[in-house]
Image 1 (tube, rainbow, N blue to C red):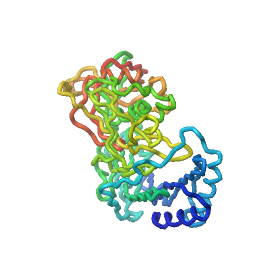
Image 2 (image 1 turned 60 degrees about the vertical axis):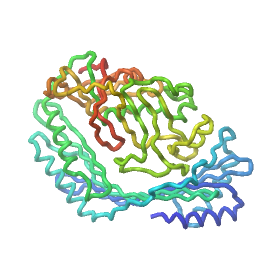
Image 3 (image 1 turned 90 degrees about the vertical axis):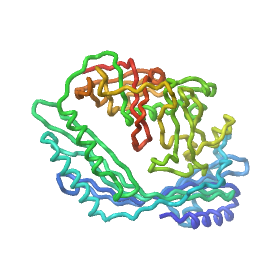
Image 4 (image 1 turned 180 degrees about the vertical axis):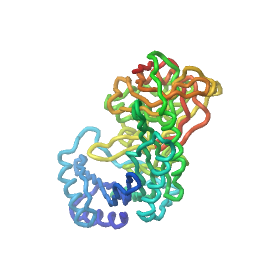
Length: 446
């Protein structure tokens, strides 16, 4: 794993030799072991150690040069600083990035959360058992073509010439299962599930197995659906994927680049139903992947984005915050260009007028479990989407799997058409979210 103090010493010594007065370095190191299985036998076993460091150097005129390296010894750091210094001559003179004003602020609760890795044989045995149980769950389930179980240790750090030095380390374990059915006269059907935890001992393998089994069995007997407008219920995962696809709505860098559905004047305006509130909460207690600081060393935090339907905040880097007279939010990713990204969404409702609908009583309602082809079916700048989905037609508690269908619409119209934000939330890898009811969305059946 990285030794941050050693790298800081390398950087300080080399910068002095190269007459570099201003620099910063962000890096990470990942130790990962992953396995895949096929028909009760190991299919693939991988172990890797990956390190990556981004170095930025400011010259006397204030322009910045950026380079990356995987060579973390003294010569590697020196060469990276020298290369970045040479590149700084060609740096952009407009909106030049600077150190975050919060890069040296104290961060509370920075203890590392490391878990000792288990032997590879334990990973293989665990995954083989899960595959076996899934294959035995129903005669129609003939394979688990995509599966994986991994454990990894991640260490991140940030340092700069002004005295900032941050580091953190985390361990993660992840399991993924995707089933496939085969029945004569029927189309193959499938379902997937994923769970993440701090380590294998606490990883909910049984929960992952139960989820994928129930979904797979529920899709075996499917029916076509008539095209038309329906009340749609988005599963937590489906709604979170939509939020991610249209995250330019509250991304300050996208707004400044005029690549967003909103603009600097959109703050304070209604963009969704008053039932919807949304935060980006890197430090949410259910966020296994919590990060304490971003690529610029800014502490992460809970950022209110939508409050009761009103756009109330944006995700900022230090550069976008300076240009928009705001505060950095801990959402920066440094590179050749500083970009802005989210951490962990929290979707909820504060409204006292939020009706609670019941799927067991609903008629002719579509429950969308998973949206597909998000890379191709979303026009993030126009706000439109047309996406195939996996789901069910719900009638008074009875589920009928939908053969093949596409849901289409306008994202901002969808947000304003929300009629219910359920009270019970689910924890997913990308956030915490309940089921969301939206009226009047167009569905095209096969």
